[in-house]
Length: 199
Length: 199
DNA sequence: TAAATAATTTAACACCGTTAGACAAAATTA
DNA sequence: TAATTTTGTCTAACGGTGTTAAATTATTTA
Image 1 (tube, each protein chain N blue to C red):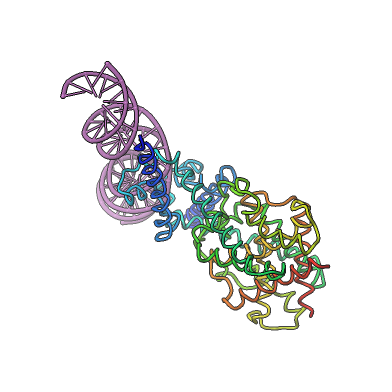
Image 2: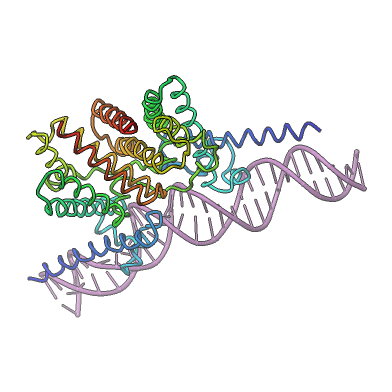
């Protein structure tokens, strides 16, 4: 009665085929193009078959999310284990995170709720009305620079923006840390960057 | 022949009605619930009517994005104008940005491509396999703390994560700064936070 | 009032996720 | 082996989506 096992293995196999098909479609055409019917086509079945393996589309997304976290964890651990000192390890860990985000962009988008947004609007507004224009002005004052396109200004703006946007995003897609901790992080980061402008 | 104007004004009016209806629906039920038919119902028309005013659904999203940027710009400028020194202004500007993100969450999500993600997966994995577990270990070493749930560790983790995730997100939804600038920001931020652990 | 124009709706298309029921193949039982 | 049950798979359908073409109604113009 080893055939039970064989059949179980076969079922397991199409289960991963489904996941792989989904991942392929997303890599080729993006998340908005992923549909049950398209997955079915890829594995040469009809759409309802998939429901024998996953409760629904969200079940497939959940599975992919899991795979993503596993993969990210691996990469971060591998990176860390190449170094001895905690300082170097931290560098390596977050660089691995950074690289994962772009090498496995589709996973990253799913795991952390990052859309491929439609349209850039900022260019249509006068610069002094844009977040960039507003937030770089005091930066320029502090750094004694006049050109808002200067790389040093740009760098600082993106540093501010990244930390605030990152913290916001984390707290929008899921409750991140507590409110006090968020305030603390925000305050520390902003004053930290501002201090760095004057040196 | 002032009726031309009156009619034009009326058309302008339903155009903003459409936008307002869309915004209301999103505030009530979230982005995934926004549909042309639902907008139509809200303004007591049928769906195809909307296409007399906007080319398609994306046109509506674009308009809302514009409104969002305008509103954000206002808030940031208002905040800045309450202070004199650039230091205080930067604090105020980014606090205004932060507040906007949560007060106008729907706008923020649209403008910056932040999804309301489905599911948290981290809790299912053993802590030493999660990004949190991996990245906090060297932090704990450097800070001389043993409890991974200690607020000081948590704060530092979220600081790292926020800056990296923020920078990643910005570069995924749209090309942000140049590659060199991104590298610079990443490197500076990481080493900056790491330095702060030891003091 | 009749003709022309504008405003609005109905009906349809092609897609989506999902479910119920039919059907054939395989496995199990008698 | 024959009959029966179970399993795997598909067809057809439901209600939803964005969008378009055509028909219809209302309004303005001649």
